[in-house]
Amino acid sequence: MPLNIDFQQILLHLFNFTLLFFGLYFLLYKPVKQFMKKREDYYKDMQTAADEMLQKAESAKAEYEGKLRDAEAEISAKKKAAADEMEKVRRAKTEEAEAAAQKIVEDAKSEGRAMRDQIVNAARGQITEMVEEIARKALIAEDDSTTFDAFLEAAERSTRDGES
Image 1 (cartoon, rainbow, N blue to C red):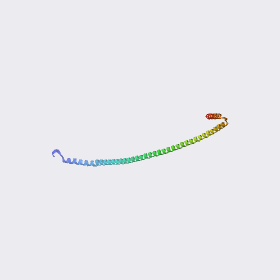
Image 2 (spheres, one colour; image 1 turned 180 degrees about the vertical axis):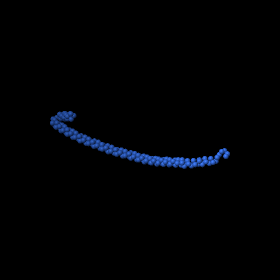
Image 3 (cartoon, rainbow, N blue to C red; image 1 turned 45 degrees about the horizontal axis):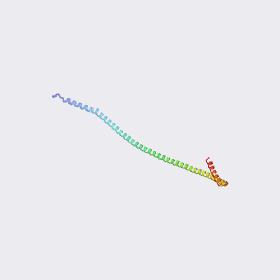
Image 4 (cartoon, rainbow, N blue to C red; image 1 turned 30 degrees about the vertical axis):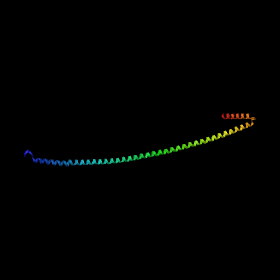
């Protein structure tokens, strides 16, 4: 044997290595590979479930945002309707107040006319009495100058009586 190489020893070592390789392959590599495959499948399932849950959450979020927009639109519509109703009520109350004010003004005018007519009638009565009195005095008087003076005096007295 040149170089001190024993082929029998090499073959035995090669056989031991092959036995060790297959023993370790069946004892360690296969179970580790199966464990890694299970772990990979577990995390894939978790990722799939997480993606599904994320999609469900996003669709629920979109649905709630739509409902929120609808609710906001409904609220604004109700606010507008309430504002319109309030404006109608305000206009109705304003018209009622104007009608009441107009009635008060008309009543005051008619009352004023009645009072004026009453005062005018009273004044006419007083004027008629004064004219009658003046006429009587004028007839009683003997001369024209005394009649005229009596007329002026009677007029001055009735004027003073009316002022006081």
